[in-house]
Length: 68
Image (cartoon, rainbow, N blue to C red; front, side):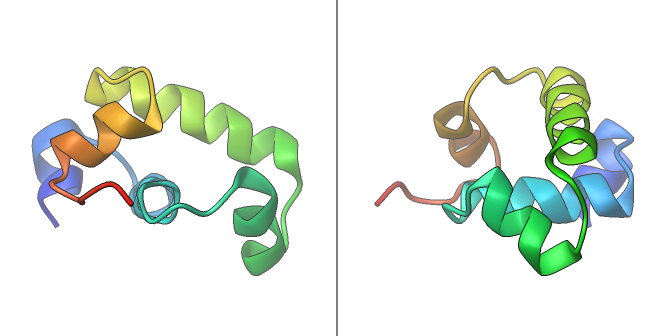
């Protein structure tokens, strides 16, 4: 996966990024992964920093996922 190799993010971070880009909320991601919001929010912030983005819109542009 390009995100893993080019930006040095983990598999979990890549999956969270893809879920966010597809429009899932942090709450929905937590429910599907059976985790709490705190680790997911931390993962989101760390991953956005690694990718150099500040919003889901910028993330969608980076990974070429069209907006709704």
